[in-house]
Length: 458
Image (cartoon, rainbow, N blue to C red; front, side, top):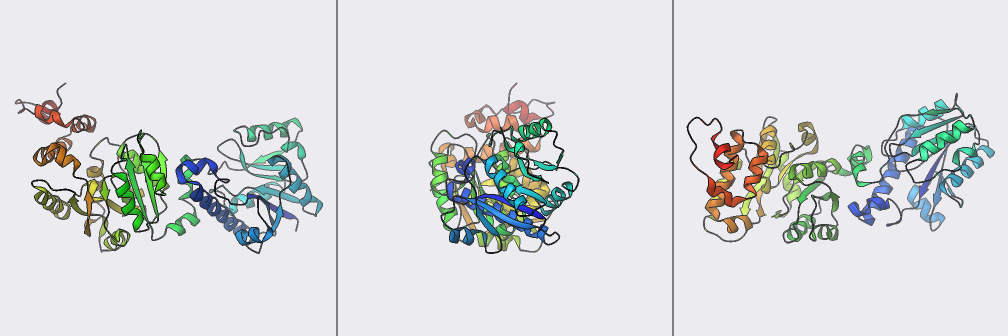
């Protein structure tokens, strides 16, 4: 065939592929993601082949033998070894072989661009009908595709492969030798944790996550509570567990990785941490879980059956507090009444929602406190919230440390302050210094927002 498409691939071994994703995913999950990216690429190649006469081959490195390579890539693709040398030398030799075998136009791609589609491949070969070369720029300074109408070894020389100047150096080579080069749309590769949201938009990721529950856990120095939370979450085999950390200085990250969670690191703030986790989640359902809350048995099934009820758009588990203290049962009953009849569950009840509904709502508002309250208020506009028929057990540490009455008072004052328009920043500052509740004073006549002046003196 006159058109040849070459895929430059590396045989998948944990710890050797997608190494910059290992801190977030772990070596095995990073390897699995690489394999999924290659499957996505091969799917788009097959779609392109359905409307074009093109010969496809994979140039593979690090494969133990042909049988292993064939088991990975399947039997319908030509598989050849990559030669020695840097990436440019290997691509150049593959291209020259293709032209020597009769190809008239040749394009080379990798296997890790989740935004690549059959349309980009079609555009590349269409561009080669006019231009000597075509290139698909990557947002990180490299490229995801290069196509040629004749051997052009000069394009591959003097390039710092793997760096941020690959595209610029290649284009400079083209200018230096007066090579006409056409450019495709800029796409993003998936190389670092910040790129992970790209993967969620691919058909392969959506298919893998169909029917699955993604558990998102925001953390900040939770080494004492997190092991029990993760053990209970992992026991029921959800689609994935995502720990999104806000700068822990204890063993939180180590514990999360030991429990095979996907680990994201970034700025603190529960709302933005949960949004960060949701952005990379691939499950059909999202369950937002506090790091000190233990989920009940068969919770993935409970999430799905609860959201399957007519008119239900979101839900939570019944509220239960660990430990014994005066008034515990009364607090649990009151909280569950509030969640059931006023449709206002607490965040530590494990709020869950369909991923597409969460996206439609735009996620959590970036508030330092009351993010769950605000989110639930918006969610209720779309339908009902329901309680799952099992309890999530949240830590009673705050209730025991401050006492039930003081904790209840603090919580209600924060809600009241928020409803009266007090700045969430000021509410968060007061909430995290709970002894300051003693400074509460009756308001003076004429104050428009009395809680602001009484709880938060200027």
